[in-house]
Image 1 (cartoon, helix red, strand yellow):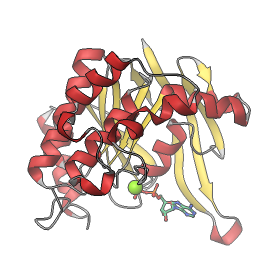
Image 2: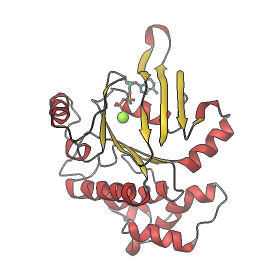
Image 3: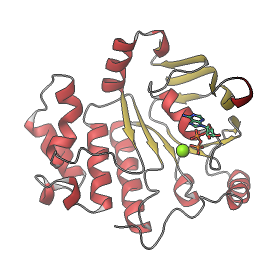
Length: 253
Ligand code: ADP
Ligand code: MG
């Protein structure tokens, strides 16, 4: 079953001589339960594409269908509800609310939707994210890896149709990055959670079911991530990017 599909998706920033065509005629189709990695050099249009897939940013032209709903045919209020219920978003810098503790950050999307989270569901989420010891801690009392695990819990608590992650391990060391990847994979396996993850980390990208390469706003191919030829091509193209080094020793774990 196709859960997400785009039709000639385009985004242009600015006008006339300042116009930047960030995404050009993207046609992709993603199955329910797929784990897709999006790979491309800095400025290739990855974040712009992700925001359009998640209902965050309206396209200049083209369409996005999520579960057969043309999401940009919705008015702003309905689009906001769609986003809150059907999309989980994870960013490189966690974007937690500093004055809310771990539990409050995780349940925030439900609160905003005037829905209460069952205690069992919250306990289960806290446990599966390995946050039991820090349930009432504030974000500034947590390590980077813990903060990202809170962000994943917050993204998954609504059981979204799609989980979108923009370089979720980009600010973490290898060990913490791998842990985040394992959590995303576990959610994908156990709950058939559809995951779309932007990454510069080739070791992580290779673990996805499929890699979508984006170059200059256009999709280059979308083959099986484990095809040798494909991976070799990716290593070559990533060698030319300045963001290839994603995991620094000084990154706070
Ligand atoms: P990536 O995530 O792959 O690094 P982005 O989607 O952030 O790429 O950016 C794609 C292109 O669009 C870049 O040339 C970038 O400078 C441009 N761009 C992104 N956001 C904006 C914006 N809000 N206004 C103008 N140009 C933008
Ligand atoms: Mg980006």
